[in-house]
Image 1: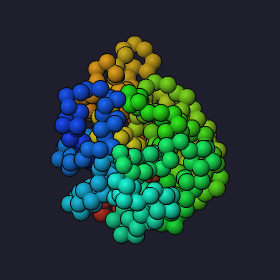
Image 2 (image 1 turned 90 degrees about the vertical axis):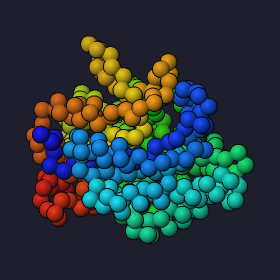
Image 3 (image 1 turned 30 degrees about the horizontal axis):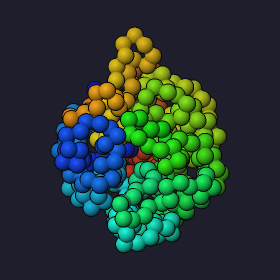
Length: 346
């Protein structure tokens, strides 16, 4: 039996990196972190479609990231219009800046992003807001930015989201393994900054990617995300990497609840699921430095759906988490145009 009426994964990477040549035999996550900015990605939709059929996932919001192209995502949406919708990211602009053909500015970035949304091919913007993407000869966002500069740049992107009526995505947490400088991606380590963004743009849905849990079992980022979500009506938590107990704390908070939780697993990222039996939590996603890069497609849906299946909640709330909230936020089409499938949310 499916766990929900209409299941949507809101965070999926349908492209995969052909990283072998760039890594030159290395299995070190540090090397992969450097290489991902330079390598191309290929269409991984056959594996994705197989898993969708296997686990009863009806639709995916596919994301660009690290060499993954908007063009390939749009081709996949056109091939499978009932299964995929796509977010966009100004990769082409970033590439030109990295090649030294243009100087990176937040205005140029936002203009490129608006140009993509103008096509009507996308339902929203992609992940990783303003993480520096640098080429050897070119420029990206300044590597070391003040908090004020980061917030101001995020607000420029939020203005684009407001104009096109799409949600804003803010990356929280880290998978570990990659050698990421704190000052190179300060926003991902500071979910509490979203308080400022939510106050300034109360009409724009803001999705906290990973809900503070991307990798590891530390709950500090998660607690920060709960703090933000409980304070603003326009904040949503992405929960696909939560173990069961983390759902309960969010569900029991009267200012959060099922209405603010959306399932999004980062399918395709292939973070391993680490098991530690008879401990808390018994399993969580984590890039294991000792084991190195996995060579297979990690099965995140099997693990994530088991965490949700353990929830003893009413089915209408389950349906909101697994798809109903995504339908509302992204204005997704439902099977046969059916309406009133989900509990109404004010």
